[in-house]
Length: 122
Image 1 (cartoon, rainbow, N blue to C red):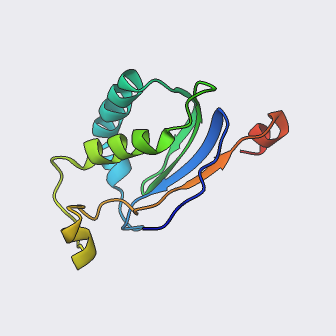
Image 2: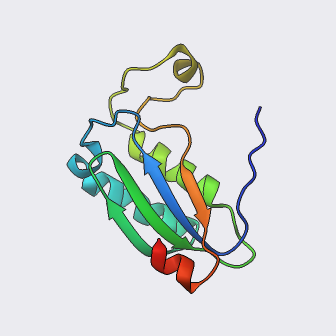
Image 3: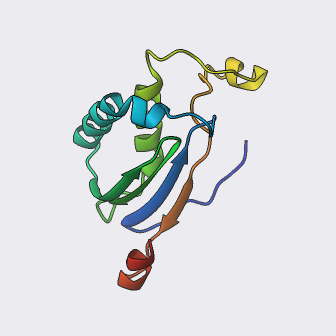
């Protein structure tokens, strides 16, 4: 299993993408996304500094407590909660084996925001 280097810090920029880039699922199911996003942020607190939801992907800036950089489990809960109850997309054997619905790309892009100038760029 690959070992990914995770960013350290308290503010992060993310891009999270659907597997099907031609899909409009995020805006079609915006209420579902809002509901699960809110539930996860209440269970595992983080502050949403900014968020932009597009049809096939989203960008978000989160602020976490200084001693908490576990954004990975939060995204896992958001993606899993959103996918729960939706029909599975076209899946590879690997995704089927791992019980993934094929709705999301497995990975997402993260960037630790270093300072105010970096935040302004994001």
